[in-house]
Length: 175
Image (cartoon, rainbow, N blue to C red; front, side, top):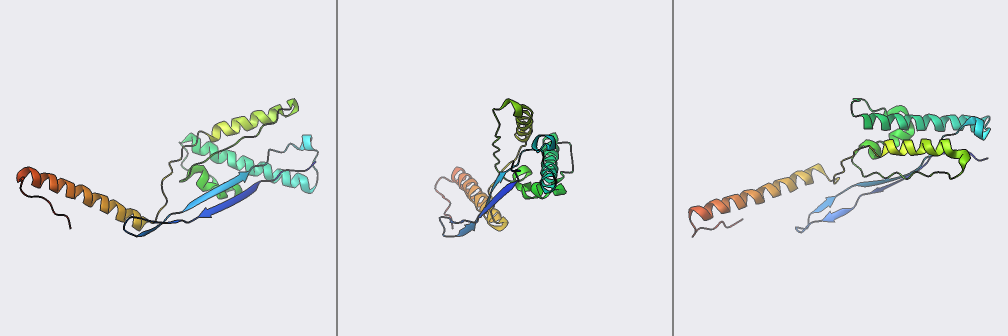
């Protein structure tokens, strides 16, 4: 029997988008594809030696991930234990950061895997309760400049309305 391991694929995107004025804006995106190994029961797999040590590491990693999910869902916890495993550290942005996250839970239809399937469903149910608020990743200077430009437009409209009501013959001529 072959033992499953956690597999990660991280894809980073840094597109440059030009606005109407010809200014380039750098945005960043990250896609994490993670295949989590199922929890390994030593009595069921009969693992020994190196495979048993690997199964123990997998179980510790999944346990750390469960602790992070619980802390995020709980909301009362001030400390999120991301550093307890390499897996949770890699998934920090996906779990409680600035991302959209999707989890696909794979179950076994076999009756001898009922316990594992039920555990997977409970795990996925807790994970879906995590509330992330994704927003566009952009350079802070670009974001501030964009906010200032929007504020200038609002102020120009306000001045235009005030000038128009005070003297209908006067109109605001923007710079």
